[in-house]
Length: 184
Image 1 (cartoon, rainbow, N blue to C red):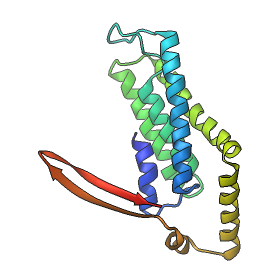
Image 2: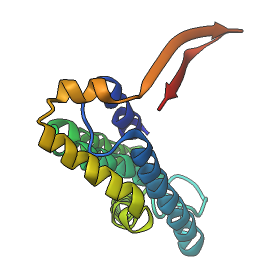
Image 3: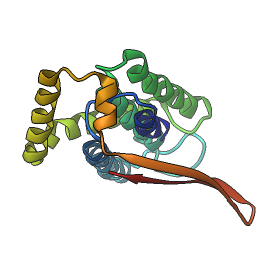
Image 4: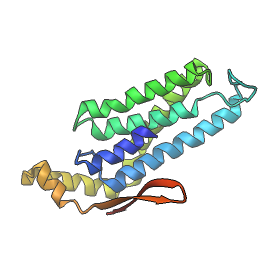
């Protein structure tokens, strides 16, 4: 899930994405839901045996597919801002795919199938989103045109966004973590 988490974390660091927070969340949810449905259906239909056990749920690789959903999500959101950041998700995705094969958890065709499915699921979500949410897309386009016409710099745009967040560490009964809240 690293590319997905980084895709949201960059927003808090001031790196501008293509879509606003709510739109990105909808797009990512659509991407992952599409991937999950097709992945489970394919595992049930193909029943390919794993290389390390007798389990018959090898094809396609769910771990690889999940990380490729996140990698393509990052690429689409940050390509116009920073191509290095946008491509970094794919470095993680390729490493995950390699490690699934190296650790004898999947065959190469499982990893390639999972990667393709993850990429295609995200591509499908970005294709269908404007068709389902026409009003949000029109609103997003109108806001973009206003920003271009007003000549706002990225610093001014960040100050205009009405997204606030807070995070604090916690410790309880030997458990440690971070509690966070986002308001938009």
